[in-house]
Image 1 (cartoon, helix red, strand yellow):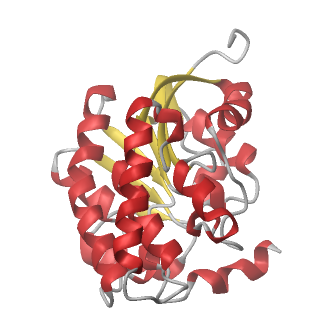
Image 2 (cartoon, helix red, strand yellow):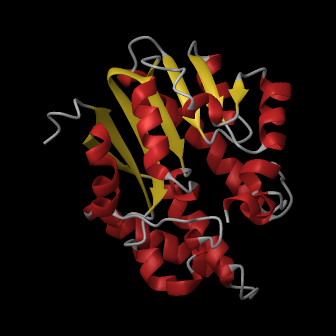
Length: 253
C-alpha cells in the first residue's frame, strides 16, 4: 500500500534521500551525481526559453541547486519530508509536497519538467504526468530518466538486477512501454540519450549481494559490456533519458 511504502525510503542505503557517503557504493553515487549535474544542465539549457524548471522527486536538491546556481528559477516536488527539509536548509530551494503539483495551481508555469529516476516510484503515474503537462508552458519539455529492463545488465543479472529495486520500484519500462504511457497524455518523444554511468552503478549494486572480493571487478566488466552494446543501440542502455515535448492532446498522432 502507498501509505506503507515510506519506510523503505528512510534507510541510509537509499542514498538519494539519506545523502550518506559511507561505503564504496555511496561514494560512487556521489561522484557520478556531481559529474552528471553539469551534463543534465547542458541538456536542459537549450530547451529553456524562460529558464523555469520543476523537478518532480527532487530528493535532497542537488540538481535544482545546480540549476539555480546558473540562473534558473526552480521548484522542487518531493514527498519525503526529510529530503525536503535538507533541500530547504542547505540550498535555500523552494521544495513542496506533491499536492502543490497535483492541485493544478501551477498551470503553464515551467518550460521544462524533470523526473530523474522517479516515474518508476509513483503509484499513479498518469495522474502525475497529466499534472506535469498542465504545469508546462506551450511546447514545454518533460525529461524522464528511468531504468531500462531490456538492457544488457538487466538481462545478465535477471532477478538480481538492482534496478528492479522491489518494493520501491513499482513500474518497469523499456523504449516502447514508456511511450505507451506518456504519449496518450499529450507528449511526443523527441530524443533519447544514454546514461552510461548507470550501468556501472547498477552492476555494483547487483554484485553487492555476493560479497566476493572480485565482485567490483566483475561489476565494472558488466557495466563496460552494457555500455559497449548501448553505443550501437541506445535502446539497450542501462538507463534511458527520454526527452518528450508537450503537444496538443487533440492532435497528438
